[in-house]
Length: 279
Image (cartoon, rainbow, N blue to C red):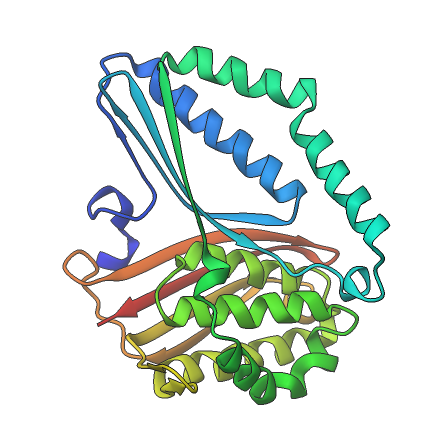
């Protein structure tokens, strides 16, 4: 019964709002402001992984952890300097857009703070390229089965797998990418997707990754994944569970992350649930 409780309301999480304000509207404006930033970053293929908002002495402190998704490789091959300058000009015009600035100014006015301090952390700097190559060699047999014509998504999956391994991203971000992988799969590939997930979970728990400079030890003790829906296009919905490692029943005293989401496909809506237990 302990797993059904929402641990985010009991235990402190990485994504929190520390609002030292008496006005409840500021809390709602802070959430809307984060949703605005999240949608703007997604339009530029940037994932907002963790966010923190603090109000102290009429000052607003924003801490954002970002993950830059892999662009198309063709854009970076045989590029001339003129084209690169044009791309930089497009980026500057995006930030100088009047509608973009008006949205931020309205949000700033509603928050009622005189000073805004932003702290951005790019999680791509923590990625070890040698370990990503090791992951690529391990799971490249599933590339043509699940990631056909989606090489950039496969690279993003490998990077986020490594970041989850070293505890740099929450399980919600990893489940979001799994939903992107599953969304366009045909019904014949559903079982392959489950087999692939089981191999990935075993790899995260049992393997210790090593590169030329660093050695990474696994802190994950157990992963549980449940999918609900019309698997393989069947008429009735069913559920399948993948459990690797050990997950304690009591989730209040243990470091267990839980997240669930819905994935909308051509074969209907699917529900994803995941539990991750760290030592």
